[in-house]
Image (cartoon, rainbow, N blue to C red; front, side, top):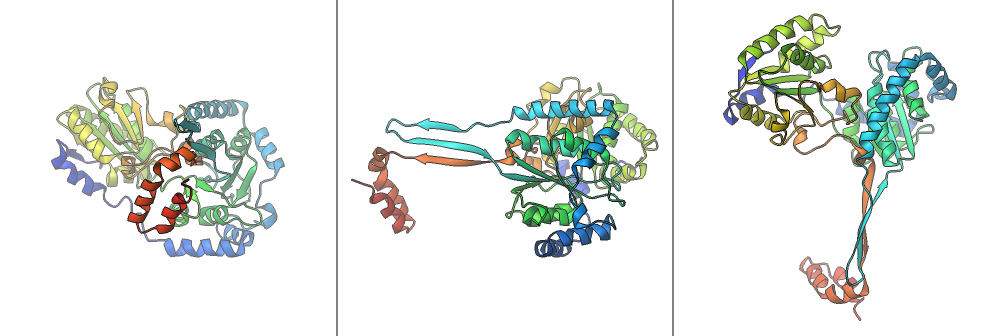
Length: 434
């Protein structure tokens, strides 16, 4: 298995790993010009542009009348899904909702002795647009992404949530996607994919309402559209390819570690799987497991290229060296596959999500445990956080200064204003002095 072993004993070895991973954020030709043309086209021609792009790339029979999914389609999908699968979806949704309910923030107020009241008012945005990739021609829709994006918006109190997803060649949508939307009480779903879907959500069309925040993963065209529209609308984040890092000691199971590395490697040829271990024998065993398990995967070629190009097994003299590497890497997912993960947790400063111990593999967070799986990538965990309820709210400062406050502080405020050369600011306060 072409997943190289590298020594890592401290900061002096960081440059080697950093150079190996350079380029993951530059996946190919720049598509800004193409996406800009699409955005402008949708802004000018609305629904007809959505239909034209949809016919060209997804479904040749798409019309303006079939852009929006009908209530009957939702009902038909619900009837098609096995009851056992619906129970799993419902349980996952409940876990995700319970976790995000704990992220709610309340408005707050404070009063001063002079009667001044200051506060912060927390309110949801009015309307959110969620992009849901169809996945391999609609055969493997990312229903987990729908759950992870829609539920925090609902918990935040967003009243209107619109969904877009590319149709299959026959115009249909995967029934699991429709059933999941129905389970969540969402009915505004449109057949639109790629950059034109993002444009419709940002600018609005006759069918699609303009939104305040756009969230959801997608390909380079979706990601570029979101980046170009920042400022026009809020977005969740600029997501890069998936990644996992694992710190492991001699107590770890090599078969489990290999499976966890492959859980990310199968995503994308640009995905990165890094193992940092203090045990050379474990490293050797993991390499053997990677070789054996990769050939058993349907996406073996994708996983093999990911491990070859962007994977690594790091041999560290101790856990402190492994932690140093991880804090510099700031990975999307971090597994602490060690005998005492809680002893390490306080040393971890940068990671999107942290999975504790041998029985908390990354996929439990992807689908079921409750925390959000939309996480910062490409080392942005240094300053960014998982998608959350806060993604869909805004905070307004509330200022109610009393007459006594103005009398006591007007001269100070006026002085600060004049230091900045803003005379009207100064006079605005001074006119309120008695």
